[in-house]
Amino acid sequence: MKLKQRMLRLLPIIILLSVGLFQNTPAGNSLFLLIPCITTFACFRGEYASLFFGIFAGLMWDFSSTAPDGLYTLILAFSAVFVSVMVKKYFRKTLRTSLFFGGIGLLIFGVVISIVYAHSFGSFMRVFFVDFFFRLLLSFATIPLFYMMFRQRKDIYV
Image (cartoon, rainbow, N blue to C red; front, side):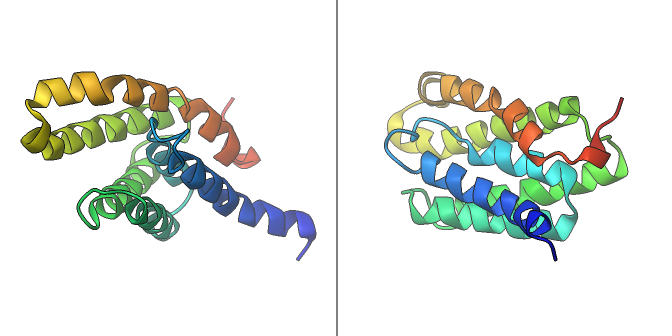
């Protein structure tokens, strides 16, 4: 196998590791970058690759967080498989599809995490809008970047 083909196969793993490391550092702790990364990856790959990618990203996030064990792994694995199946059956691989599923994934994640943290920190609306809403918007803005990284030449529609 040529070196270029090997590097192209390793590129998603390198992207995932770098995004996961950046998200879990104190400087990148304010963004949820793994969700747009996973949903955009799932738009271009099959169900099994998306499932393993989602599980790996979720475990990487779970090991560095204080959330209940396995919460991020379940969320990312389920969303990766769901997006992959929906894109394969009903949608085209376009930027709008990535924005749609990334936005829905971020919104569902924000609601679930707000419900989990609302028990300890006050009302759901306060936790969602004060703590998470701006962070979710900034994470949503990174979806076109991940789209450009994960798309392949054969996936471009004119």
